[in-house]
Image 1 (cartoon, rainbow, N blue to C red):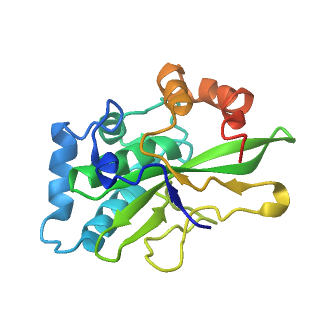
Image 2 (cartoon, helix red, strand yellow):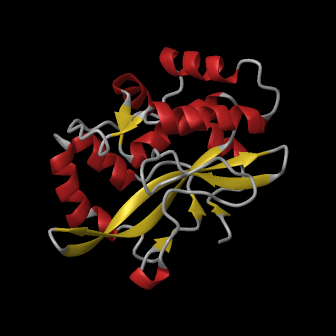
Length: 208
């Protein structure tokens, strides 16, 4: 799949926002520590990616009912769903000068035997040393999921299954999807978020 940047200006993919709040001291401290001694953007990106993938839990995997959203909140609470973890990865990488955007997939899921489309969040980063955008999936590995840092053959959590109607959204967005952010910040717990995800969130990106 050809990735399509929403903006041709790489500086747009370096800006902090209320959600990608890398002005936070803890985020700066972690990013600086992880990048220490690394000489290339590939080395820095790989170290930071693997930290978020492996050291920040996926909320669903640990059955955490609290919902996190902002990068600093995900770092402080030490967990987040896929989209929330993508916010933290973006903050850490943007702070270190690596352009980072947001990508989404529409994945087939089943709840109580009723199928629905789930939105999965991941990142794309621009590596100037190889003049290339690559996608990274910091969701967190477990049995059956083995996402890796790769600059050649993409290794994400869930390669799409077209026969099930799954789709990759090709756009590399500058900011996290506003509707997803609204859901993460308004839901009282993950059970509430799950209901909202099935009722409303699955319908975003319908043009794809």
